[in-house]
Length: 267
Image (cartoon, rainbow, N blue to C red; front, side, top):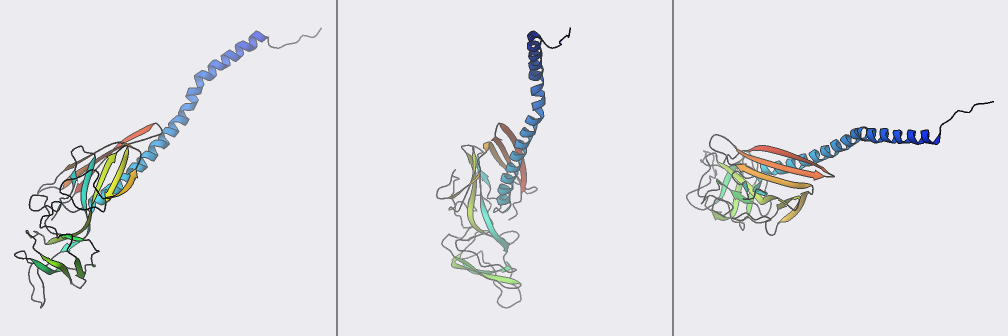
């Protein structure tokens, strides 16, 4: 007589139950590396996005008019005045015939500057010795900046170029280092509704507005869940310091990064 070997139905059910328990215990352990990989990938993407945001903001900070950086009371926005070019004006007459110095005792419509200065674009304004203090505040339209209606032209030359103003202007204070700046537009960065925005091409305003009226708007990032900006003004012995803090979130992942940079304010 032959003997047949196999599993009973009860043994099969018990085996299936045990196998299910083992799978239930080991499945989370097996899935953890894949989850960790995906989380790391998402965080790396957010770090890359934050780096791009910081690069754009700090690029504008490094091209800002000295002493023009200001942060709103909520710390959600900061503003600066963008510089297109800069140089040194002639303050002392030379022995060369036709040298033209900048006169601070009365309105002056022309002066020489060191080096070859390209002709400024329409709408450019000229600033000398902006400190941000009353009487020397470009935002307030003080005489440290030429009026928006004043056209500025430059005749490039070597070793000096000639700058001419369509209307004579008297700057109230000479720069200790004979520096001048050409500016075109204020720039504002603002966090609102989980987004980071950049504004430019608007007129100077004595009081910061968030957002500024009439500005061109550009979306920088739409993954910003929180942000905080602060600025420590410089002193006679050190540069100012701007602190930019961003929290970016996407697909259940979140990162918080802080970037700081020196802000030279030599005028």
